[in-house]
Image 1 (cartoon, rainbow, N blue to C red):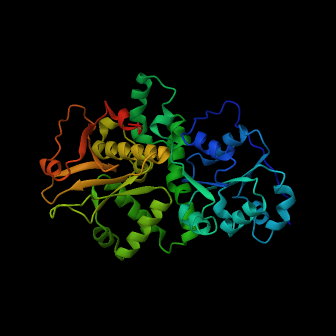
Image 2: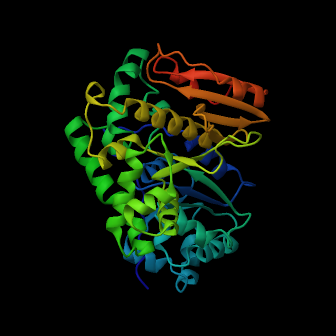
Length: 398
């Protein structure tokens, strides 16, 4: 069996470390003896999972170890065939971190065995492809795991130490380059290079590796079509016709993009009215910089004709990050439109109430809630979100 390599990781001096919202919650779970034994952190590549778990280890006072499962010898060491040999080493630990755990064959069974044999042990498993890792661990780890999602930096995380003037200044940069750490934390030239690399290789690595797509060029073309339709309703039939493929393939590819944390869908709200559009969806990107790089447009806002789509995508994705991170209440999210073109950009259903939002970049843009919505959904609240008041929208405790 390969030699076991223990890696104790510390952040480099001078590195800029931004505190992530879910860090304290994860640490609380680790330190809670009666809490879940296995912590799973999902997130796309390059969003900061490795930095997060290394910071957790650095602050952890008991015995811990970190393994990067991208390395072949680590994969072999933690394989199902070798797991029994690890017992003597593992029992010395209080915390085990397996980064990019989807690389380990039969990872769900391996984690179950480790948890069964070492009930004192807390385990963190990170994965950049939830469709791969979740399929392997769902059944073996039922009732044993707590799942977290890590997204690119949120606006709140990135600006937490800035004053209100600095926060206003960085907004334009965020709308162009997004919030991947290696992009937004660097100068414009380096950030552009890193964004290009993420969008062209890292982001799709697991999809191409695990799904073995026969025609990846169609997959990339689909992604471009989705990027150009940001903020608009998406028709699977129309996409299938443009790509000259079956509609089921379009649905499969969109599902893969969702499961790899590149895009998310917003369904239409339909409850009471015949003329409400119900079988439709909008698609947004978790990171606006990725969307901009896909369409090859990093122009400043003064030279763009898609500021409305950019702003809508930014506000909704940032809102959803906060809802995922704080998860203090159950919620559903929608957009709303009728065949008469009456519409609302974004709706949350929480505790029996509908919170309706129109999202407009221009603070001077006057928008009224459609009368039809008022009459149909009487238990509602309405607000216009613009570039002046959007920070209130990113606070979920209200």
